[in-house]
Length: 252
Image (cartoon, rainbow, N blue to C red):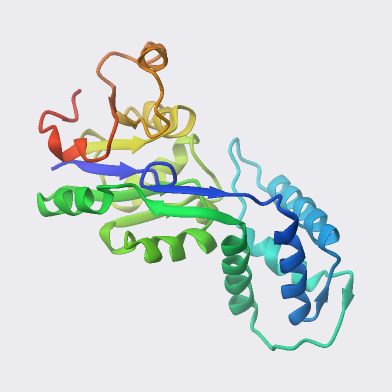
């Protein structure tokens, strides 16, 4: 049976976030003040950006990925001023709540692409493996997987913020293969990004399927495909084609 390794955002979930919105930082500053950490909105924004950069510089990898929970905790602990907190909270509870609040305020839309859940269910019913390999933050992604009904469909989940590296670094995919004892010859990577999803599959000698959620033109797709050995990358326009086209196989 085939082991399908899926990307998440813009592959299974259609999402749009905006972390530059002024109202986000105004509301987050008010939220932090409830826990005794006092910031002006722009001060909080700039502190966030600085700490993200500092945490990134501590990871000496070609494609580093930080865990934003560390940043949310530092913002609380290293606030420039303090006040009497309205709520007492453990560190773990705080960072999870901070992450949820941040994501809700920055998220403009989120929904599963049509046919996604039904397709994954059909693949599982046919005996295929369903895996997730996502460049994402666990503090955001795990709740969103639960909210969208996707969480329980996966046989295993790997998120870059937990690994400290991200696609296209081949070790990220390698860790998933090793952890779950997956055989390369049985695997297919499915994603929407040539530079991350398709690139990491190529680096690990695994065939891939490009899901054209961006609606690239036929001409653009042909130009991309020229860069890869024939038969190693397929293109589909909808995830439902994974079950509609029985001819998709590991050998292209």
